[in-house]
Length: 176
Image 1 (cartoon, rainbow, N blue to C red):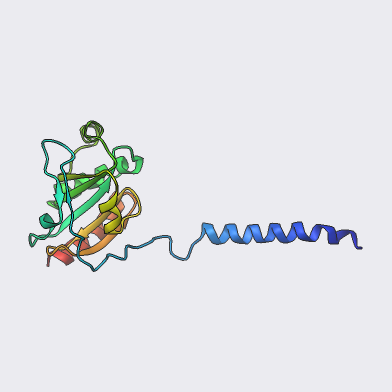
Image 2 (cartoon, helix red, strand yellow; image 1 turned 90 degrees about the horizontal axis):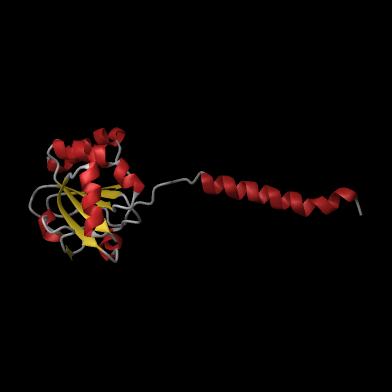
């Protein structure tokens, strides 16, 4: 037997490992879009996350005006990072509703005191049932909802200042 043949399985394994690693680190589509885009929001009613704010329910987003629905958590680092961009949207007159995932009122209050409160209402989803029904896979995640309660756009991850022009363009399209 040739001496180099005993190394062939190791070389084949290393080659397969490198190919799989490359394929996993460079997926064709890094975004997993919600299958709910273009569909009405599922019916839900979430209790208020804080005593001085309203909860969130589907009916609120069927008032003829579009809404921005942000899914966040006080324990989520990227959620804190998006706070400046959300405040800019709020200052531009975009109504933002929120769903707090697996969170406590005291933690939400500390989060809002530290990063600002762009939200008109915050509902709490302790079991993530509404989050999953909407088609969200994590936090932060946001949806643009038209005035009839139909999901028109999904933004996965933190909203950044560089995302604002695109979000504002989509906002104007669904308000027209």
